[in-house]
Amino acid sequence: MSDATNDITQLLRAASSGERDDLDALMTAIYDDLRRMAVSQMSSERRDHTLQPTALVHEAYFKLVGQHSTDWADRLHFFSVASRIIRRILIDHARERRAQKRGGDAGRIPIDTIDPPFEGPNLDLIALDEALKELAQLDERQARVVELRFFGGCTIDEIAELLSAGRRTIDRDWMAAKAWLYCRLADHAAD
Image (tube, rainbow, N blue to C red; front, top):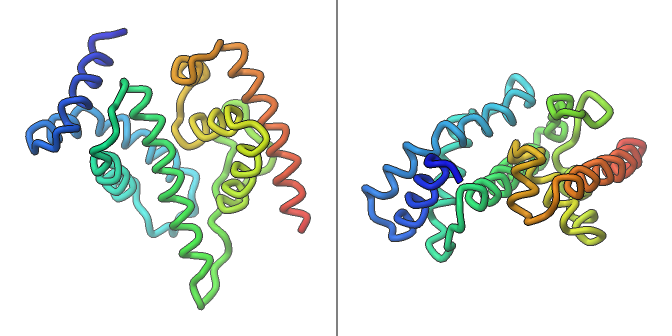
């Protein structure tokens, strides 16, 4: 484990005390990573999106540090939870937009920023969330791989380490999950 990873892990454990200085030190250490995750997600959103990357980072951060009962194992554990929280924030935002009385189409996000991409230029976040819930019923690990890769921006190696699985296993899960999601989302688009 690198010194930077050790430092973040120590800061995560210290910040669980809720002390202001510890929380400030943690924010300084992880802000760039959270911002990278947010910018990655927001660059795929529509141009008139009302949620900005900085707001997404801050909302995610406050939800993360508000979890006093969480015993952070390490940096990957933290970013796994962060990716899940960012997903929830974006899904909630898309649902709010869809529910507006004046209408508004579902939040769409180009998925061609992922290597390798799913097919199709846009993806309905709400449909993806529903599909991920279905996938989790079939294979929880595949759903976690998609969540970590798509919403968390984690690499296959990072996911393998986080989920305590082999790289080839995670790579197979990623490929199988993409194929399943492609079929499921194509069915949704046809409806």
